[in-house]
Amino acid sequence: MTNQEVLIAGAGPVGLSAAIALASAGIRVRVFEAEKELLVDPRATTFHPPTLDMLDAYGVGDVMVQKGVICPHWQIRWHPSGERAVFDVTVLANDTGHPYRLQCDQTVLSQALLDRVIRMPEVTVEFGAPVKSVSQYASGASLTFERDGRDETVKGAWVIGADGAHSAVRKSLDLAFEGSIYPETNLIVTVKFPFEDHLEGLSGVNYCWRDGGNFSLLKVEDTWRVAIYPLADKTIEEQLTPESIEAALQHIVPQPRPYPVLARRAYRAHQRMVSKYRVGRIFLAGDAAHLTSPTGGMGLNGGVHDAINLAEKLIAVIRKDEPESLLDRYERQRRPVVAEAIIAQSDANRRRMRELDPEKRRASLKNLQEICADRDKLYKHMLNTSMISGLRQAAAVL
Image (cartoon, rainbow, N blue to C red; front, side, top):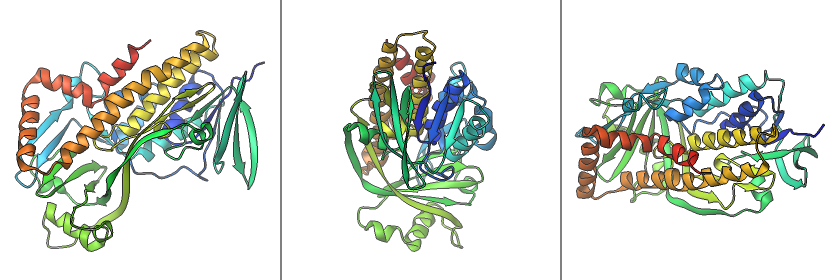
């Protein structure tokens, strides 16, 4: 019998999404993860409606909704005046089973997927097994990983590289990862403080302008995640001090006592895309294939969309319902949409919020308020920002 096993590098949300989709169709899968256990990674928190629709098919959507914060609207806000444009996601009620954004740590998704796949006989997940390289031949592909200090090589039919921004699969294929890194270093601070009791009309997701800068407030369970964007007149080291963090939080809502900061981390954002999504029997998905600004919360969602799109095509080919040429459609469908509907849109979101000119901000806010006040314009806007338009665009590509 021909070995039709799919080898997946990376046990994050993208790799495990591909694994559960393939295994649900009876396809054997082996997943290799560098970490010794599931990585607790709080980076992404926003899940868009179509992503939740996809996860419903594998019994994971309900788990996310139970543990997350449902946000039927989000906003762009001027601080401290409170002037805002509020985007009503419920206008999408006829287009999705989840007409809202869901705020939830991405680790919740990874754990929910892992809990299911480890009970599926088709799936083997190997932790502490960093992938070193991949190769392929006429009828299959191989993956070399490290275990207990020694390299081991396994063979399968196909390989999916879902091993993140520093993907060993992508490097093994010697593919260009073109793009750039944004100049600023951003700081994410998690605090347990009721911002909603102090800022009138707050949504679960808020992108805020303030004099000389901007910040974001995102609700996750019983905490708020505050994205503090850097000031031009201070070094990153200065802004990372507890005193600077406290000052930034006090600027949002002045308090007589210090804020209860639960966690803090700094990160640099990129916009990059791999030159090819498919090289023969080897594919790339998620951060291994593309990176984008986090403004708008599209990066992880796009990775899950990659995984489900690719899995559906592999299933059809492995079952011999379709010829192998169907797999070329994966790149034709996903790469342009990522470029136009994810990377470009996320970059535009970032540029709008990083704008410092008050008049340009005012004009932008007025335009957004006009969109929110016109149901037809709002509906079209929400199809785009909720990633539904991009998926429809991709589905139309043959």
